Figure (cartoon, rainbow, N blue to C red):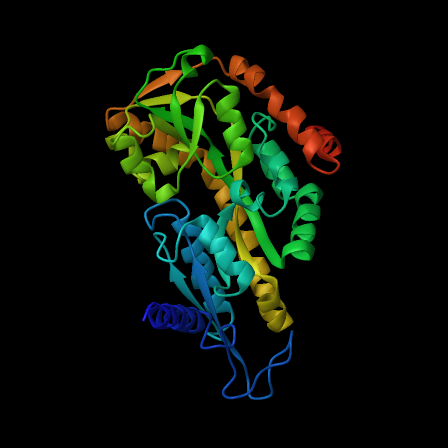
Length: 347
Protein backbone atom coordinates (compact mmCIF):
# COMPACT_ATOMS: atom_id res chain seq x y z
CA UNK A 1 0.00 0.00 0.00
CA UNK A 2 2.86 2.39 0.83
CA UNK A 3 4.49 1.68 -2.53
CA UNK A 4 1.18 2.33 -4.28
CA UNK A 5 0.72 5.69 -2.49
CA UNK A 6 4.28 6.69 -3.35
CA UNK A 7 3.67 5.82 -7.01
CA UNK A 8 0.51 7.95 -7.05
CA UNK A 9 2.41 10.94 -5.59
CA UNK A 10 5.22 10.59 -8.12
CA UNK A 11 2.79 10.36 -11.02
CA UNK A 12 0.86 13.41 -9.75
CA UNK A 13 4.03 15.48 -9.44
CA UNK A 14 5.17 14.39 -12.90
CA UNK A 15 1.82 15.41 -14.38
CA UNK A 16 2.00 18.85 -12.71
CA UNK A 17 5.49 19.46 -14.06
CA UNK A 18 4.39 18.19 -17.48
CA UNK A 19 1.55 20.69 -17.64
CA UNK A 20 3.62 23.60 -16.31
CA UNK A 21 6.31 22.95 -18.91
CA UNK A 22 3.78 23.55 -21.66
CA UNK A 23 2.01 20.25 -22.25
CA UNK A 24 5.22 18.33 -22.74
CA UNK A 25 6.91 20.49 -25.38
CA UNK A 26 8.70 23.13 -23.30
CA UNK A 27 5.90 25.61 -23.91
CA UNK A 28 6.17 25.46 -27.73
CA UNK A 29 2.93 25.15 -29.63
CA UNK A 30 3.17 24.79 -33.39
CA UNK A 31 -0.28 23.71 -34.47
CA UNK A 32 0.75 20.08 -34.46
CA UNK A 33 4.29 20.49 -35.76
CA UNK A 34 7.48 20.71 -33.69
CA UNK A 35 9.77 23.54 -34.89
CA UNK A 36 13.43 22.97 -35.46
CA UNK A 37 15.72 24.49 -32.83
CA UNK A 38 16.13 28.21 -33.40
CA UNK A 39 13.47 28.45 -36.09
CA UNK A 40 9.75 28.65 -36.65
CA UNK A 41 7.83 25.80 -38.25
CA UNK A 42 6.24 26.15 -41.67
CA UNK A 43 2.80 26.25 -40.05
CA UNK A 44 3.79 29.19 -37.89
CA UNK A 45 4.96 28.71 -34.31
CA UNK A 46 3.69 30.09 -31.04
CA UNK A 47 5.59 30.05 -27.76
CA UNK A 48 4.32 30.02 -24.19
CA UNK A 49 6.65 31.11 -21.41
CA UNK A 50 6.08 30.57 -17.70
CA UNK A 51 7.74 33.49 -15.87
CA UNK A 52 8.00 33.10 -12.09
CA UNK A 53 8.82 35.76 -9.50
CA UNK A 54 9.39 35.06 -5.82
CA UNK A 55 8.81 38.76 -5.18
CA UNK A 56 5.50 40.32 -4.19
CA UNK A 57 3.23 41.71 -6.89
CA UNK A 58 3.42 44.98 -4.91
CA UNK A 59 7.24 45.12 -5.05
CA UNK A 60 9.31 47.31 -7.37
CA UNK A 61 10.16 44.17 -9.34
CA UNK A 62 6.55 43.84 -10.47
CA UNK A 63 7.39 46.54 -13.00
CA UNK A 64 10.10 44.31 -14.47
CA UNK A 65 8.02 41.18 -14.96
CA UNK A 66 4.79 42.95 -15.91
CA UNK A 67 6.47 45.20 -18.49
CA UNK A 68 8.47 42.29 -19.87
CA UNK A 69 5.25 40.32 -20.41
CA UNK A 70 3.41 43.25 -21.97
CA UNK A 71 6.15 44.39 -24.35
CA UNK A 72 7.21 40.93 -25.54
CA UNK A 73 3.64 39.89 -26.26
CA UNK A 74 2.94 43.16 -28.10
CA UNK A 75 6.11 43.11 -30.21
CA UNK A 76 5.70 39.50 -31.24
CA UNK A 77 2.07 40.04 -32.18
CA UNK A 78 0.96 37.55 -29.57
CA UNK A 79 3.14 34.76 -30.97
CA UNK A 80 4.94 34.70 -27.63
CA UNK A 81 2.63 34.42 -24.63
CA UNK A 82 3.96 34.89 -21.11
CA UNK A 83 2.15 33.39 -18.15
CA UNK A 84 3.21 35.41 -15.11
CA UNK A 85 3.37 33.86 -11.62
CA UNK A 86 4.23 36.30 -8.81
CA UNK A 87 4.13 36.17 -5.00
CA UNK A 88 6.20 32.93 -4.93
CA UNK A 89 3.32 30.95 -6.42
CA UNK A 90 5.82 28.50 -7.91
CA UNK A 91 8.23 28.51 -4.98
CA UNK A 92 11.08 30.56 -3.59
CA UNK A 93 14.01 31.95 -5.59
CA UNK A 94 16.08 28.78 -5.37
CA UNK A 95 13.08 26.67 -6.46
CA UNK A 96 12.54 28.95 -9.45
CA UNK A 97 16.17 28.87 -10.57
CA UNK A 98 16.19 25.08 -10.34
CA UNK A 99 12.97 25.02 -12.39
CA UNK A 100 14.57 27.15 -15.11
CA UNK A 101 17.63 24.93 -15.20
CA UNK A 102 15.50 21.78 -15.49
CA UNK A 103 13.16 23.41 -18.01
CA UNK A 104 9.98 22.93 -15.96
CA UNK A 105 9.58 26.72 -16.16
CA UNK A 106 11.17 28.90 -18.81
CA UNK A 107 12.02 32.09 -16.90
CA UNK A 108 12.34 33.56 -13.43
CA UNK A 109 13.39 36.70 -11.58
CA UNK A 110 16.69 36.28 -9.72
CA UNK A 111 19.54 38.22 -8.16
CA UNK A 112 23.29 37.78 -7.91
CA UNK A 113 22.91 36.33 -4.41
CA UNK A 114 21.30 33.17 -5.74
CA UNK A 115 22.85 33.10 -9.22
CA UNK A 116 26.25 32.96 -7.48
CA UNK A 117 25.25 29.53 -6.17
CA UNK A 118 25.43 28.40 -9.82
CA UNK A 119 28.55 30.33 -10.79
CA UNK A 120 30.93 31.63 -8.11
CA UNK A 121 32.12 34.53 -10.28
CA UNK A 122 28.96 36.45 -9.35
CA UNK A 123 30.09 36.44 -5.72
CA UNK A 124 32.52 39.22 -6.62
CA UNK A 125 29.55 41.44 -7.57
CA UNK A 126 28.18 41.04 -4.04
CA UNK A 127 31.29 42.00 -2.13
CA UNK A 128 30.41 44.63 0.50
CA UNK A 129 31.27 48.20 -0.48
CA UNK A 130 32.89 47.22 -3.80
CA UNK A 131 30.87 49.78 -5.77
CA UNK A 132 31.50 53.50 -5.28
CA UNK A 133 27.97 54.53 -6.25
CA UNK A 134 25.04 53.56 -8.46
CA UNK A 135 26.72 54.92 -11.59
CA UNK A 136 29.71 52.68 -10.98
CA UNK A 137 27.46 49.67 -10.35
CA UNK A 138 25.35 50.27 -13.46
CA UNK A 139 28.44 50.53 -15.67
CA UNK A 140 29.72 47.21 -14.34
CA UNK A 141 26.35 45.47 -14.69
CA UNK A 142 26.06 46.60 -18.30
CA UNK A 143 29.70 46.08 -19.21
CA UNK A 144 32.17 43.43 -20.33
CA UNK A 145 32.90 42.07 -16.85
CA UNK A 146 29.35 40.86 -16.25
CA UNK A 147 28.88 39.91 -19.92
CA UNK A 148 31.77 37.45 -19.54
CA UNK A 149 30.12 35.98 -16.43
CA UNK A 150 26.83 35.65 -18.29
CA UNK A 151 28.48 33.71 -21.14
CA UNK A 152 30.12 31.40 -18.63
CA UNK A 153 26.75 30.89 -16.94
CA UNK A 154 25.22 29.73 -20.23
CA UNK A 155 28.09 27.35 -20.94
CA UNK A 156 28.15 25.77 -17.49
CA UNK A 157 24.48 25.73 -16.51
CA UNK A 158 22.29 26.17 -19.59
CA UNK A 159 20.79 29.35 -18.12
CA UNK A 160 20.86 32.78 -19.77
CA UNK A 161 20.83 36.05 -17.81
CA UNK A 162 18.97 38.54 -20.00
CA UNK A 163 20.19 41.81 -18.43
CA UNK A 164 20.90 43.32 -15.01
CA UNK A 165 19.81 46.26 -12.88
CA UNK A 166 20.49 47.14 -9.20
CA UNK A 167 18.21 45.96 -6.43
CA UNK A 168 19.31 48.86 -4.25
CA UNK A 169 21.75 49.33 -1.39
CA UNK A 170 20.94 46.96 1.45
CA UNK A 171 20.44 47.95 5.09
CA UNK A 172 19.46 46.17 8.30
CA UNK A 173 15.94 46.28 9.75
CA UNK A 174 16.07 45.08 13.34
CA UNK A 175 14.46 45.13 16.75
CA UNK A 176 17.84 45.82 18.34
CA UNK A 177 19.33 49.34 18.23
CA UNK A 178 22.72 49.22 16.49
CA UNK A 179 24.66 52.47 16.57
CA UNK A 180 28.18 51.11 16.04
CA UNK A 181 29.68 47.92 14.61
CA UNK A 182 30.26 46.35 18.03
CA UNK A 183 26.50 46.43 18.66
CA UNK A 184 26.00 43.72 16.02
CA UNK A 185 27.79 41.21 18.24
CA UNK A 186 25.44 38.46 19.39
CA UNK A 187 22.53 39.52 17.17
CA UNK A 188 20.74 36.78 15.19
CA UNK A 189 19.91 37.98 11.68
CA UNK A 190 18.21 36.41 8.70
CA UNK A 191 20.45 35.89 5.69
CA UNK A 192 19.56 34.98 2.15
CA UNK A 193 21.19 31.82 0.80
CA UNK A 194 24.28 33.68 -0.33
CA UNK A 195 27.75 32.88 0.98
CA UNK A 196 28.87 36.51 0.64
CA UNK A 197 25.86 37.89 2.51
CA UNK A 198 26.34 35.33 5.28
CA UNK A 199 30.05 36.17 5.51
CA UNK A 200 29.27 39.89 5.58
CA UNK A 201 26.82 39.51 8.47
CA UNK A 202 29.27 37.38 10.41
CA UNK A 203 32.14 39.79 9.69
CA UNK A 204 30.08 42.47 11.42
CA UNK A 205 29.86 40.19 14.47
CA UNK A 206 26.28 38.92 14.12
CA UNK A 207 25.05 35.35 13.65
CA UNK A 208 23.59 34.65 10.20
CA UNK A 209 20.58 32.34 9.85
CA UNK A 210 19.52 31.40 6.29
CA UNK A 211 15.73 31.64 6.02
CA UNK A 212 13.52 31.63 2.91
CA UNK A 213 12.05 35.04 2.09
CA UNK A 214 8.48 33.89 2.66
CA UNK A 215 9.31 32.79 6.21
CA UNK A 216 11.14 35.94 7.36
CA UNK A 217 8.13 37.83 8.75
CA UNK A 218 7.10 35.06 11.14
CA UNK A 219 10.73 34.34 12.03
CA UNK A 220 11.14 37.91 13.29
CA UNK A 221 7.70 37.87 14.89
CA UNK A 222 8.55 34.71 16.86
CA UNK A 223 12.07 35.91 17.77
CA UNK A 224 13.86 33.24 15.73
CA UNK A 225 15.90 36.18 14.42
CA UNK A 226 16.10 39.84 15.42
CA UNK A 227 15.94 41.22 11.91
CA UNK A 228 17.29 40.98 8.38
CA UNK A 229 19.21 42.85 5.72
CA UNK A 230 17.60 43.88 2.42
CA UNK A 231 16.94 46.88 0.22
CA UNK A 232 14.50 49.38 1.81
CA UNK A 233 12.00 48.87 -1.01
CA UNK A 234 11.71 45.17 -0.16
CA UNK A 235 11.60 45.90 3.55
CA UNK A 236 8.66 48.24 3.01
CA UNK A 237 6.61 46.28 0.47
CA UNK A 238 6.96 43.10 2.56
CA UNK A 239 5.71 45.03 5.62
CA UNK A 240 8.59 43.97 7.83
CA UNK A 241 8.17 47.29 9.67
CA UNK A 242 5.27 45.59 11.45
CA UNK A 243 7.69 43.30 13.27
CA UNK A 244 10.94 45.32 13.37
CA UNK A 245 11.27 49.08 13.91
CA UNK A 246 14.93 50.12 13.55
CA UNK A 247 16.58 50.71 10.17
CA UNK A 248 20.37 50.59 10.36
CA UNK A 249 21.75 52.47 7.33
CA UNK A 250 24.81 50.40 6.45
CA UNK A 251 24.43 50.40 2.63
CA UNK A 252 26.74 47.38 2.68
CA UNK A 253 25.80 45.38 -0.44
CA UNK A 254 24.05 46.17 -3.72
CA UNK A 255 22.77 43.09 -5.54
CA UNK A 256 22.06 42.93 -9.25
CA UNK A 257 18.67 41.65 -10.47
CA UNK A 258 17.95 39.88 -13.75
CA UNK A 259 15.53 37.63 -15.57
CA UNK A 260 16.93 34.15 -16.12
CA UNK A 261 15.86 32.04 -19.09
CA UNK A 262 16.36 28.40 -20.01
CA UNK A 263 18.92 28.54 -22.83
CA UNK A 264 17.55 25.54 -24.71
CA UNK A 265 14.14 27.17 -24.85
CA UNK A 266 15.69 30.50 -25.89
CA UNK A 267 17.53 28.81 -28.75
CA UNK A 268 14.33 27.03 -29.86
CA UNK A 269 12.79 30.41 -30.75
CA UNK A 270 13.24 32.28 -34.04
CA UNK A 271 16.02 34.86 -33.99
CA UNK A 272 13.54 37.70 -34.32
CA UNK A 273 11.81 36.65 -31.08
CA UNK A 274 15.14 36.15 -29.35
CA UNK A 275 16.05 39.72 -30.27
CA UNK A 276 12.73 41.04 -28.99
CA UNK A 277 13.35 39.35 -25.63
CA UNK A 278 16.89 40.77 -25.38
CA UNK A 279 15.82 44.27 -26.46
CA UNK A 280 12.90 44.41 -24.05
CA UNK A 281 14.99 43.30 -21.08
CA UNK A 282 17.68 45.85 -21.95
CA UNK A 283 15.06 48.61 -22.01
CA UNK A 284 13.57 47.57 -18.69
CA UNK A 285 16.99 47.20 -17.06
CA UNK A 286 17.88 50.74 -18.18
CA UNK A 287 14.60 52.05 -16.79
CA UNK A 288 15.03 50.24 -13.48
CA UNK A 289 18.58 51.57 -13.20
CA UNK A 290 17.13 55.06 -13.38
CA UNK A 291 14.32 54.24 -10.96
CA UNK A 292 16.38 52.59 -8.22
CA UNK A 293 17.68 55.64 -6.35
CA UNK A 294 14.30 57.38 -6.07
CA UNK A 295 12.61 54.10 -5.15
CA UNK A 296 15.06 53.49 -2.30
CA UNK A 297 14.82 57.03 -0.98
CA UNK A 298 11.04 56.86 -1.13
CA UNK A 299 10.99 53.54 0.73
CA UNK A 300 13.09 54.96 3.57
CA UNK A 301 10.60 57.81 3.96
CA UNK A 302 7.70 55.34 3.91
CA UNK A 303 9.38 53.25 6.61
CA UNK A 304 9.79 56.40 8.72
CA UNK A 305 6.09 57.16 8.26
CA UNK A 306 5.31 53.70 9.63
CA UNK A 307 7.22 54.48 12.82
CA UNK A 308 10.61 53.02 11.96
CA UNK A 309 13.61 54.76 13.55
CA UNK A 310 16.45 55.38 11.09
CA UNK A 311 19.92 54.98 12.61
CA UNK A 312 22.98 56.28 10.77
CA UNK A 313 26.09 54.21 11.39
CA UNK A 314 29.77 54.69 10.56
CA UNK A 315 29.95 53.08 7.11
CA UNK A 316 33.74 53.21 7.03
CA UNK A 317 33.86 51.11 10.19
CA UNK A 318 31.42 48.64 8.60
CA UNK A 319 33.56 48.48 5.46
CA UNK A 320 36.72 47.83 7.47
CA UNK A 321 35.02 44.97 9.31
CA UNK A 322 33.84 43.41 6.04
CA UNK A 323 37.15 43.56 4.13
CA UNK A 324 37.94 39.96 5.08
CA UNK A 325 35.30 38.89 2.55
CA UNK A 326 37.30 40.48 -0.28
CA UNK A 327 40.34 38.36 0.55
CA UNK A 328 38.26 35.21 0.81
CA UNK A 329 36.55 35.51 -2.57
CA UNK A 330 39.62 36.83 -4.35
CA UNK A 331 41.13 33.45 -3.47
CA UNK A 332 38.03 31.25 -3.95
CA UNK A 333 36.87 32.58 -7.34
CA UNK A 334 38.93 31.79 -10.42
CA UNK A 335 40.82 34.99 -11.30
CA UNK A 336 38.96 36.59 -8.40
CA UNK A 337 41.50 39.31 -7.70
CA UNK A 338 41.65 40.19 -11.41
CA UNK A 339 37.85 40.62 -11.46
CA UNK A 340 37.98 42.79 -8.34
CA UNK A 341 40.71 44.96 -9.87
CA UNK A 342 38.76 45.27 -13.12
CA UNK A 343 35.63 46.38 -11.28
CA UNK A 344 37.54 48.96 -9.24
CA UNK A 345 39.14 50.28 -12.46
CA UNK A 346 35.78 51.02 -14.10
CA UNK A 347 35.31 54.79 -14.31
